[in-house]
Image 1 (cartoon, rainbow, N blue to C red):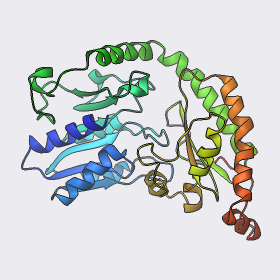
Image 2 (spheres, rainbow, N blue to C red; image 1 turned 120 degrees about the vertical axis):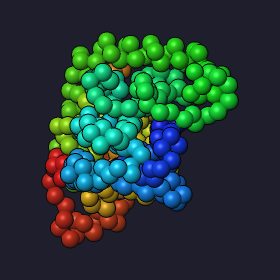
Image 3 (cartoon, one colour; image 1 turned 45 degrees about the vertical axis):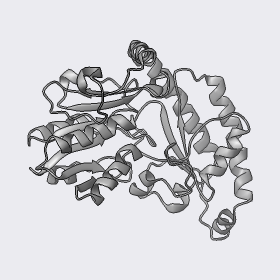
Length: 330
C-alpha cells in the first residue's frame, strides 16, 4: 500500500513537470501524509483539505482548491482510523472536469464496499493484500489505461516496465484469490460484520461512562469503529487487552509507537482528553459473536482499572465533568 501510494503521487509529478501542486486531506494515512510532508520541503505546494467533526471531507474547500497547476489529487476512499467514507467518486469527477489526475488510497475500502472502476473517473487506485487476508507485503496500483506513468522502482522489464524487480508470484496469486473471495461474500459477510460491530459499540457506550464513537456513524465502513475513553491512554488499554488476547490499535498502526494523539482525531476536533484514549477495532469476516461478547465482558473493567490510576480522571470527577456514556459522533 505504501509503495503504491508513493508511486502514484510521484508519477503524477514526474509526468507533469510544470505542475507543482498536490491536493490531499488532513486525515490521510502516513503513507501519503509523510510523502507529502517531504514533497513540501522540496518545493511542492501541498494543500490539505479539512474535515468536519464527523470526519467528512469539506467538498466546498476542495472545489475551491482545484487549480490548473495541480498535478494530482490524492484522497483516501475510507479512513483507516474511523472508517469514514469520502465521496471519492464525486471528488474524482470534479477534478477530471478540470483536467487533474486523481489517485485514491483504497486500502481500507477494497473488499468492504462495492467498487467499480468502469463507473468512476479515478486514474489510479492503491490497495493492500493483507487487508483482504492475503499475505503481508503484496499490494496493487491500478493505473487507468492512458494515464501517464513514471515507474518508482527502475530495473528490469517486469510488469511492462512499470515496476522493476522479480515478481512475487505466490503472493500475487494469493491476492488474486483473496479478491475473488472478498467479492463473492461482500454483501452477506459485510451485513454480518456490521451487526457485530454495532453490537460491540452499543454495549461499550452503554457500559463505560465518558466514552464516544468517533466519526460519521452512517457513512463508514461496516467493519471499523473508533471509540474514545476519556482521561486514559489508548496504549494502556491495548496493553491490558493484550493480556486477554484482544487485538486492537490506538491511532494508525504505522504510528502507534508514538504517544501523540491521532492526527485524524485532532483534525476532527476531538478533545485532547478523548483523542488520547482512542481505540480502533477492525472486525473481519472471521470474527464471531462469541469473540465480541468476550470483548464486551473484558473491556469495561480494564477502563475502570486504568481510570483508578489516572489523575486526570480523578480531576475530572472532582470538577464535575464526568458524564454518562454518549454515542455522539461530535
